[in-house]
Image (cartoon, rainbow, N blue to C red; front, side, top):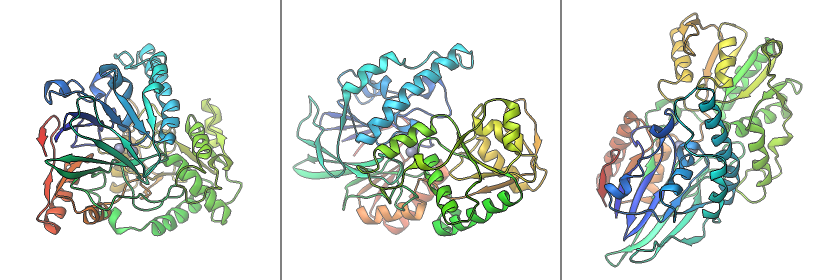
Length: 464
Ligand SMILES: [Zn+2]
Ligand SMILES: [Zn+2]
């Protein structure tokens, strides 16, 4: 079996791993790098032919985050016979998110916000649905390629990360022995507010493991109930002083989980029921897909509907924004990393100097992003300068900034549990900063000296 990372593995970048299993070519995820633009954001699909001397028969899309699926239309253009496998919920999300992405790329190009032409157009997406094959959780599907020597079978396991998310198991024969590979993709063992914890096969020979939180010591020391309690206290303090709590979120997943959590806090009386919750953009459409699939996908409470949470739209004009920012209020807006020119960045610049207000960061903020800069400034103390956007500031930071660990990713001790449970021969560490991978490698080698732990480099062909 050959493994070749087509996206940068030493970072949270474009997830895309190529496997050649007995002549069958499989791509695990086809993402785009969220920090890059245009062709630079794509995985190196040409390496499949150049370096692995192979072809892509099947793509597996584990979930509907852009770093896992954003380049699928380009992959299908490069390898026109590829079939794309996913869950039905992921397909519904892709049918909404990919056209939205095409429109955004077009708009940015036309407004000269980027020199890059769109990677794909909305029209080009029409034929895409013909290459989608959807599968139920925990049921086998065939992945044998045209040139495949021997059967290759896939099976999805709920990943507990976002709606529709899965890890995938591949089973095949090699040298007359059955071999199993498991790719966790983004994974979460613990239940969130809407989505229950992930499920895993009982064993694997090769494990491809994400490492997003591998360098995050604090997240292993906090429990979800403790974080929820701290969140409840902080939020009610902000509301009591008539402040605005800005909660930057990823529209896909984190936003819906936060809305469910806020509704619970209202239901139990931790925050007043009449405090307005403001949302914007595609978050509501995605909530609709969460609700449509609530009886057919893993849920903690299949009766809960995200759409039933009372929400008002963040107003468009600057004056009206000033009105609602007067507080009290809760703003659940994109993007989680607070990239400019997203709404979370625009609103943050308007509240950071105000002591009454707060920015509550509820996920993992990658190094170098505005959300991380805000956390770093907050650690320096009141009045520390922060630059949230080019040409704005620095601004003195006076609002409350707190980080809560409601990540959709397992912390590093839980990731080790997955290794314990599957007891693989080989672990490939991917999807994490180098510090994170280093910690994971040391921890696995210490506990399981017999396991071969590898950190595949971007573009490095590995024989397994
Ligand atoms: Zn993800
Ligand atoms: Zn990811």
